[in-house]
Each structure stands twice: as structure tokens, then as C-alpha cells.
Amino acid sequence: MENLLSIFVRSIFIDNMVFAFFFGMCSYIAVSKTVKTAMGLGIAVIFVMLVTVPVNYLLNEYLLKPGALVWINPEYSAIDLSFLSLIIFIAVIASIVQLVEMIVEKFAPALYNQLGIFLPLIAVNCAIMGGSLFMQERDYANIGEATAFALGSGIGWWLAIIAMAAVREKITYSNVPAPLKGVGITFILTGLMGIAFMTFMGIQL
Figure 1 (cartoon, rainbow, N blue to C red):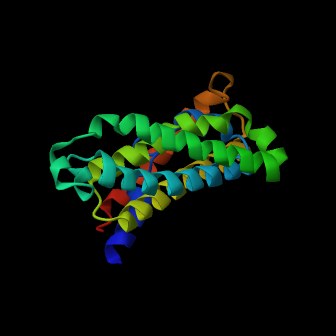
Figure 2 (spheres, rainbow, N blue to C red; figure 1 turned 30 degrees about the vertical axis):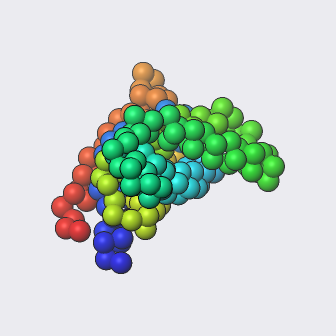
Figure 3 (tube, one colour; figure 1 turned 90 degrees about the vertical axis):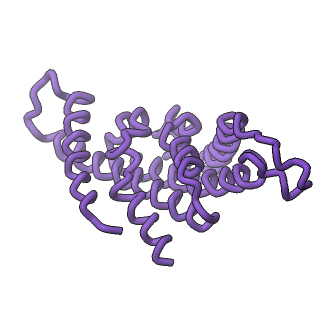
């Protein structure tokens, strides 16, 4: 339980997808103009991450890893399907994103219209893909650890975009120099927030 909590907290603050690795920056910059739309996209990212990483973990453990097919037959112990990882991970992510898109369109059409093209673009959000690849690289011991990492990573991305949206709503009324308005000041703020999040690296987990 302590290990799960450590992975969860670390993935939110220390290994934050935006501020530590700068993953998912396209939708992070584009959708963080208002808190309302940032909240909707952030929740969608959490859901997609929470589903895709555990599913991809199971596929990696029982299909893709070298010797993963031994549960079918011991003779398959030499088979290595890891070269299919990217294709299979992307297929799983695209399927879940399509499901999320249909749900949002059905139950929250206003949010669906506000998010526009950036909702289906979750499928190519490198934060989502990064979650599955980090899961594979770190070789978590069980699906519980993979799920804790997925939830923490999703919440970390949601926290980042909500914080940025809140700041951008405030600076609308600030005297920002004309050349820095929009994307320019957003990149500067992202860098400053990334530096701030570096303080969490001192936490011993």
C-alpha cells in the first residue's frame, strides 16, 4: 500500500507529465484559456489514462514482453512481440478516446463544442502515450502499481492545465507586453511553474 501511494504521489508532483517531461503541450497550451474547458479536458485525460495504462500493462505482460506467451504454451517462451508495442498501445488509446468522444458528445454537447478538435486529439496526446511507455519502461510489479501511476499521471496533467487556465484567466486583465500575449506568456508561465514543481524533487518517497 505504501508503495502504491509513493507511485501515485510521485507521478503527480515529481514526475508530472507537463512540468517534468513537457508531454501533452499542444492541448495543454490550446485548451488552457478557461478553467471550464480545461476542467473538461483534464477529466477526459484522467479517464483515458486510467483505462489505457492498465489495459496496456496487461497486454504487455501477457502478450508483448519476451516470453510473455509462456502462459499459453511453454514452447512459446522464446517469442518476443515487443516490436508491436507502439502499434498496440496506439490502437488501445485511439479506441478509448473514441469512446470518450462519443460519451462527451452525448452527455455534454456544450463541452464537446468548446473542446473542438482537441478532444479527439487526446489520441495523439504524447502524455497518454508517455504513460504507457513509462509503464513499460519502469516494469511495474503488478497492475495495481500501473493503475496508481496512471491515476497519478492523469491527475498531474489535470492539475497542470487547471493551474495554467486559472492563471491565464487572471492575466487577461494584466498589462502583458503585446509581443508576449497569448502563447508567449503561456510558455513563460509554464517554465516558471516547472521550476516551482522542481521543489517537489526533494520529497523522499
